[in-house]
Length: 165
Image (cartoon, rainbow, N blue to C red; front, side):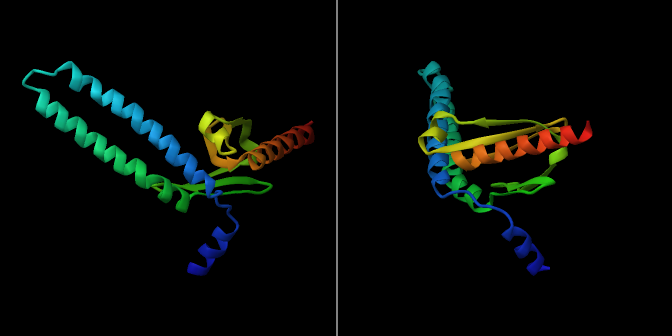
């Protein structure tokens, strides 16, 4: 049984190591925003009886968030795998909860490539694949791979539509 899962996972692609850097930068920006949000109530009730409790609660929440945001990129990177063949797109991912998502190519309605400022800085992009049942995102792909995946999926969709005519 172990041999099957190892052989199965060998077909999956891993992320480029630079993706971890992008994750850390994105998480640092998230932590900064969370710090501002948590600081607001503390500042607003300064001088009241609730100040110490609010400050302690905000500090505890910030510490938990910081710990998660610091540890999660390495775990996400270690567990993230994706695969695409003629019939299916598969994504395995997770930090706390691990998921395995499979999308049949024939169900794909739309393909988008997204490059936010952090991703652009590291030459990365996300590919969002939309179906009638929802979306799946291939995250932190190198830009050329993301464009290639999107182009390949679009070509497959066009070929399937022509075959139906």
